[in-house]
Structures are given as C-alpha cells and as structure tokens.
Length: 114
Length: 109
Image 1 (tube, each protein chain N blue to C red):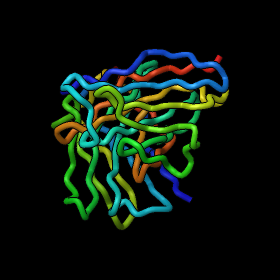
Image 2 (tube, chains in turn orange, green):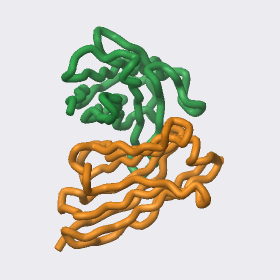
Image 3 (cartoon, each protein chain N blue to C red):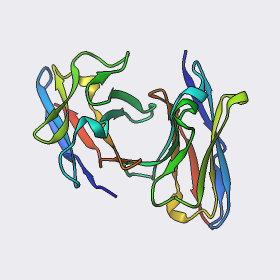
C-alpha cells in the first residue's frame, strides 16, 4: 500500500526556518517526481515545487514565490523527500502536502507568526 | 507565470453530466502541458483523478474522464453521484513550473 506521511510542521517566527519531511512507503522516491503543494487557510492549492526522479536528472524546480528561499531534496536511503523552508514569511502559512507517483499525503500545517 | 482559470462553481443533478474546464492565459492547452485533475474533499487527502490529460488513476471511477475541449483541458463527470460533491483543481505544467487553477466547487443537487 502506498502511503505518504508529512511531518515537521509547526509555529515559526517570520524570518525563521523549518524543514518538512515526506516519508514514503509502497514506492521508491528515487524513481518518482516528488511534489510539494500548499494551501493557505480558506484558499486554493498552490504548487510549491518538485524534484525530478533520478532517471530524469534529479533536479528541483520552484514556484516564483518560494524560489531562492525553499529547497527540495531527497534521501534515498530513508525513502524520504524534504522541503527546507528558509526566510519564512507570514504568507507562507499553509498546510503543506507532498505528492509522488500520483499519491498525496494528509498534509502538515505551517504557521508563520510573530 | 501563467494564470490557470477554472469555473468557480458548478452544480449538477444526481445522475447528470457536467464538464469542468481548465484554461491557460498563455493560450491553448495541449497535451504538452500535461493537464492533471485533483479532487479535494474536506478532511480527506488530495486525490489525483486524471493525469497527462486523459489517464485515470486506479481509484478513479469510470464516470470521470479527461480530455481537451475548445482549447482547454476538460474533466467530464457523467452520472454524478452525491459523493462527487467536492472541490476540483486542475494543474498545468508550463516552462518547468506547474500552476494550479483556482478550483471549481462542484455541488451535486
């Protein structure tokens, strides 16, 4: 059974950092394009970024609002993808979801507030 | 960055047919934008319904189908069920980034 479990969310001050994890089971993250999307309270979905599979080059791409502040990576030994979030802003407050192989996790809440 | 447009809301009768569309500010939506459709219900995980324009996932009911229609991506629901009431989002891939539409709230009534 495929499962994705996000963790690492919480309350952080503006300018702070947080690292989200996305532990996968039932498939290998090495061979999947792993995506992160977010949803601010009461709003629609926003694509954050993705890392390509190893076979497709393994490079990451980001949406304009997070480019230069967020970094997506992958640890194949742990079958886990990560979203490193730096220089956080109030407008980054959202539930963050990871997805891979067309499956999605339940999300983790990130609140940026002073 | 392109703007992706969807109908904000639609209503369909039980057993009826409805088509949701997904347009791009950059022009015609083609298979090269790899349109995907997602379903979101309150309190439930996001579900991929359609990927790469027309491909259903293993859990996607056959009453959902994806296509290109009039320069847009389209999601057609034939034989709507009460459990299909949800928010539906499309996603397009453009120039290495992906962009969601604003979502369509579908009411089955």
